[in-house]
Length: 332
Image (cartoon, rainbow, N blue to C red; front, top):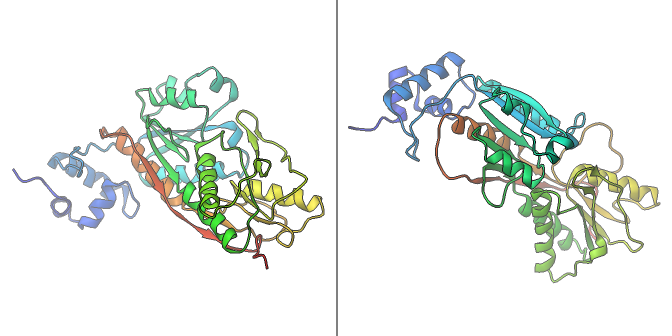
């Protein structure tokens, strides 16, 4: 018996194959009524994804969004991502429920209330907690997707930005502009994202045969307590690559407090292309992360898992682009 195609489903519903594709992928562009009709017909016809899994997409899922509370300040990067996650889920007729993970629950490996009360169908973990905690989460029956970090053991689906490539591009740009003394700001032992950004910096320096001084690798945070004061050495490099825009702004303020100018005396780059509220100093050169694509993929992954899709866990890397502004300059 011939397997049904998206075109077959479209004919049965009276829509195009493109509309069928969007409906089954959970994308916007149609009414909830049409989406439900397409999903019902697809299931009745036994449509299968290319991976061989039959469609059993469920509507009106409750999806928990768990964020370590150290990352969830007002208008922070993760609070903005959370709002977009809720909006994207709503566009696909699902509901997002927030729970903050406090330090006590993380240390005691206590499951989120949303899971213990069987309140949600799946969980998106936004922001990296301890390794013990996120691996415990991955072992639960409730499907989980990691957003903006990953487990090197591949214990769950994850969506991340192209962190290594991004910091490689920023560091290479500084090197091409004559900088040979470059530092990195970020504690690469805290999250997989910072580690990968440090590796991009390291790769660019290695390929250019430039030395990496340990006193120019500046920790910016601790695993449990969040951001800390930056301990700058007496002898400074000519440029710093920072692991995020927030830390870059903090560094610029500290340098200005020391009587140094950015970029006239020291060049600074950030990462994320994200800033909220008042900023001081020059417009920041950074790497713009495609957060919209990351959110769209995370929603699709968790809906697929909640709908019964069975396949090996994987990490999806979403690219971005460098944005060069006024916080760095070429050396003569």
